[in-house]
Image 1 (cartoon, rainbow, N blue to C red):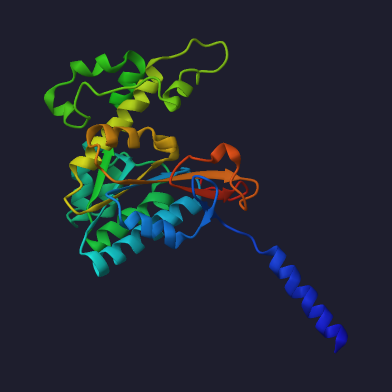
Image 2: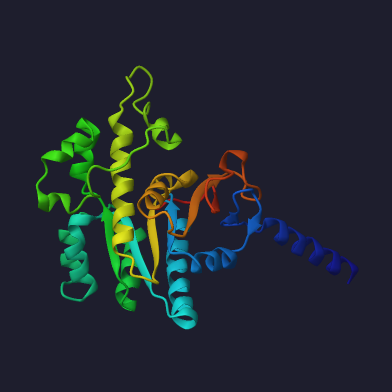
Length: 290
């Protein structure tokens, strides 16, 4: 019996130390918080900016779980509505997205005629289907990529040649722009060593950020909570979309979520402090969706 008890103690002790954490959530100062605390903070805001790592399954799973939980809680407790939106859908494709959400066209036609990201089926389709099943609006917020490419090549001035119909898919021109924001400054040398700084590269990022912020605000009904999905770089350090939301509507209440990968998820690395209101930390070894 003595040896059995010792064996069980060793077994249970090994199981405790072998438990793997899929993620942890931290405050800007590095304190651990629960998913419930994140959700409660989100419920009290106008906009939730969920910054993702595009190929990380934990990000995509929590995006869906947060949408489901917020929808249930808003309906049960507040009478407020949930609105979804994403970088992964370009503004000129809204009519096709709406037709699918309203049951007017098949999934085959929607997916065949929309410019969907290659990882749509695994990573973003569950979000669209959740919206469709619950009758929630889902907004395409990003600038059509052809126009972002124009800015990357020739600056904001390239957009002046667009006609009125094309401009309806972009934030109102001219867009405010602060080239001194650290995130934009860091993009200047992304061409690598030996390349001249490309001042239009951060401008192409800015026109995406401005457009997403504009269409978040334009499509958020009074009293609604807008949950927006995008690459984490678009809102890290309270820049990007966050900066434009505050520029366009200073009183808007926002909560930001950043996503990072670390070797050890038990403590927030110093370089990740202050990234967002909540920092989602995921093991670097987490499998990827592509």
